[in-house]
Image (tube, rainbow, N blue to C red; front, side, top):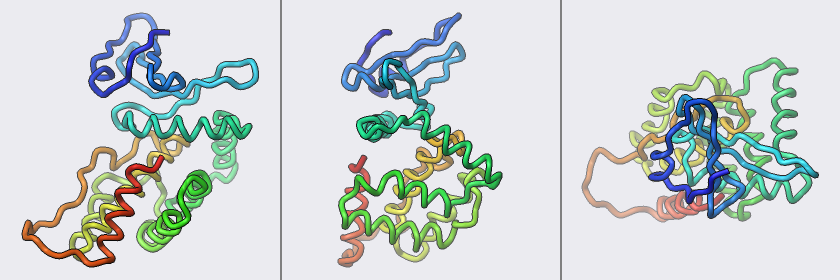
Length: 230
């Protein structure tokens, strides 16, 4: 398989081949590859050994699923494999469990699954902040909404309510957490694409300078830590 250094520029330049799909492996992270189909669809995959077999785990389609998030996801999947958990089998098991229940996955259920899969890697204080933000701001408003029915427009309006209330910094923190949750939903094949992928961060309509409160400064630092946490 060809190897290249994956960057947004090199990925955008990749061209499909007429009669077959092809995978390009990253020179920085060999377990990360991008698959290019005959139609030009580009999908990140995690390549790993399970016993004597080589397996592939679909992460998500580019550019809706960014290169930065794909690298982070590979790091998380590596941890699973090191603990004796087969990511592909785990995904299949979760999908079958949802099929048996025959119920649409709601934001409330997604939040529980997301927390179970991601919180162990967070610092205690960050974990507490996540839990509070998810329950108080996301589940409290969107908890009963089926994830598949969420639209970009609906989520944009939801996030703009924070600007109206004068809580833009908190809104951007919620935006970051919600985007991670929805990328997790893509990864779990609950939805095909993240409806808020690429959505601009919130900004106040007024550009005048003002002094931030201690609460807003703490929220800002939490948001920065969130952006750099796998």
